[in-house]
Image 1 (cartoon, rainbow over the protein chains, first blue to last red):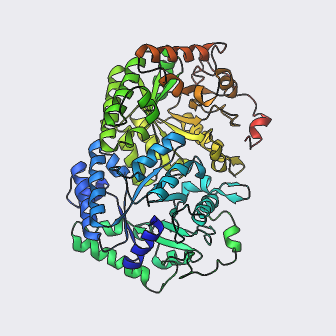
Image 2 (spheres, rainbow over the protein chains, first blue to last red):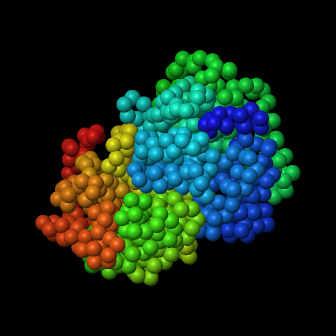
Image 3 (cartoon, helix red, strand yellow):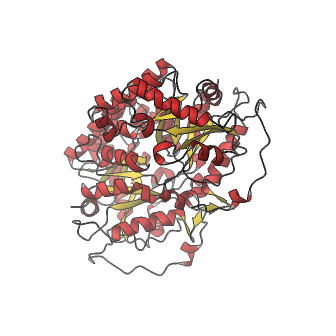
Length: 308
Length: 308
């Protein structure tokens, strides 16, 4: 089964929340853990153990493991194995991007069958062009895994790149459109359903993107500590045909290290996301038609390029 | 001493060549090495041992180590330690890019004093905006290290992002301009001289960029197997105020594993680069005035945005 379908099933079961695993120095200290490989491993495994069976996806941030060199990366491998055994989906946030045999190398590392660093899905960064990511997208499809390509991030510095225009559209929209094209033309033997190529779009501001043809997942960071409220998020992604995964990190992680604290915070956010938003955009709207609706007309607003 | 000055000294001594260390499966097989952590380590250390004292810079590609999981990353750490001991500058090609505390995490991993993965310089990818890279640029300055930010790559898929326009200029030019601004306003206590913020510009085609104010290094991949000839490279970067580092990989690596073969190939390229090009652009043209010349007028060609 492809990643998109697996993800949609988990979201049907546990709701759409994705919880970030960001063992940065302040949180490690707050949890009484050392800022060392053992500390990041204990932190991450505690989150996995507390949330497996309670949320659809966790998202470890690779930088906080790489910070501790190869022992940190070895800790990440054990966290990934732990999550696989617990049956929770893992989106590993690595933001890799390169060309040719180098991109193939990254794909093998993070999406290859049998690799100790393989996750269910990874994030990718498209500065070298969406097409340069093809080796990762193809390997993900072949191994039942997924990718989330950066499109429009919420940090103010992102606009100079992501809202630049060429051929009549912004860079960010071109990333969404390229992901949509992949999801519309699935490689055999993946059947129709939610596609495997997701995008990352920050939830803290208007994104101005046309998402009515995506047919894939959208990772939307920004809920909670970064300021976005569930109602804002639902409104900003109302036009999405796909599946929205709002991400929280700090506001859940700050309730650890107790499993009850972590689960309670995750439950709070799941309920907040559910309240007043039955169905779209937090349920898969895809091409099998079970919850399908036609994409709306392209709004004037989404064509007004600069939303900063 | 800042990275820019250290680099300029090495280039004065050994010439401007940068040799990539890309232990991909085909090269490992050609060298009779296994496609495993031990194989990539032996490959990389052989290149370092052969070329230390003969070229200014080597550039290991992180993806080929990450492919082998944490044992591959541990091998990379030993390669970095080996290179430090041998006194050859290492530009680690990791193309990291993120925001906030995550970017700080990557900076600590690859540019932090005492980190086992720290190199003399790293590559960065600016899809989240040049400004998002500030934690890495600041830590590099503080520890005498450098960064090379992707600007214009030679792969055809790069154009959709890198040649998109905003505020009257391309994304690629905005990266060069932001690097120039950093190099023009060095933080204390770095004295004047070649700056620490470099850019990456492919050498295989016309780049269309105005480089007369960069005052920093340019990594220019594409020589040799990728098709660029030394005369092409010199011509394309004639307007550079800074220091050009042409990079070769395959055409040197294919002459291994013998140290004589590797050194012979590196010597060939050094001589090719030197022939007919005394001085600019393979010597530092920077603000102390020793080899300074005024930037030329902005050419019509560099303003004609689309050079594909």
